[in-house]
Amino acid sequence: MSSHDETRVCTDPVYRESVFAHMADTFGVTVTGYTQTFLGLLNMKWTVSADSGPLFVKCYHPKRYNLSDPDLNRQVERSLSVQHDLHLRSGICPDVYSAGGRHLQQSPEGYYYAVMQPAEGAPPKAGEVGAARMYRLGRVTGQMHTLLQTLPAEGTPWKPSPGGISGKWQANREAALASAEPHPAVIRAIERQGDILQTLDPAMFDGLEPGWAHSDFWVDNFLIDADDHVQVIDFDTVQYSYPEIDTARALLSGAWHEDALQREAAAAFLAGYREQHDFPAGRLPVALKLLWCREAHWWLRASMLNHASIPPKRFAEELIWLTEQWDRLDELFGDW
Image (cartoon, rainbow, N blue to C red):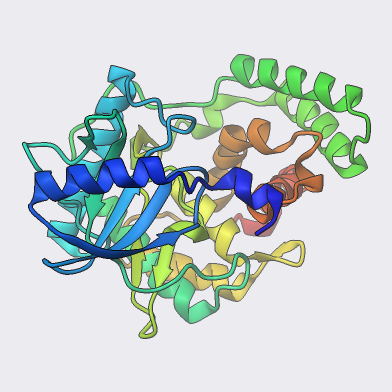
């Protein structure tokens, strides 16, 4: 494991011992063994052997989730409840177990965790998900969105704000120009981002219906088993916004390869999706632009293409491509 990998994960035994002891008392199980999972950033995850059967345990690292914040605590509890509901209604995600009326637990030492049903399978390789698997992923995504939209609306949905995005763009631009070794491709994308923001009209999104979205819908959060069954994991950031964010993110994550969206795989995803949820012809360019508005300021930064970790670098490459293709998205995908 590289030193950079060590910054992405936490193996502190203090967390584990605290969580396992509390879990044993709270859920009445005896832990007989465990294996740590290293997918993700900082949060600790274990596949646990117990007398009651296998369990999956996720401990939230305070640097990722400050769950002493009541609002964030409520958000994560709600997200875990949504995952539990989706499991009961469809089986497209692992179950989340509850105790004391809550899915989110806290050990006496203050560590927050959740206990889940283990899920079979492994994440596919980004950009190289074949058409058959993309079709199945599209069906599961459409099914998830159909079920999520039966939940009551909550507050005002997130919507792009040119003013807010421009402020973040300006800060990123200044940091990139001041960087010791700015990457030329990132600098070009940031400058182009500024041009786009000058003429960005949020009215292009007025035809979209607000709704619940997973909001972190990339390949690491899809598990595909040997029989090509798909399960979705990591619902911590479920948000009332627009389902199109998930659709665009899944397409880029699964089918963007060698500087292009692979048409067969992308078309297969949309075919599967449309069997379960509405996605009118011609909507893909708007969905991709909505995703760009949400993510460009996260990933178009000076250091991203030099990142030692693959996910941030790939996200940056995807957003650079979207930025370069902005004016051609309708031409490329307007009839999809």
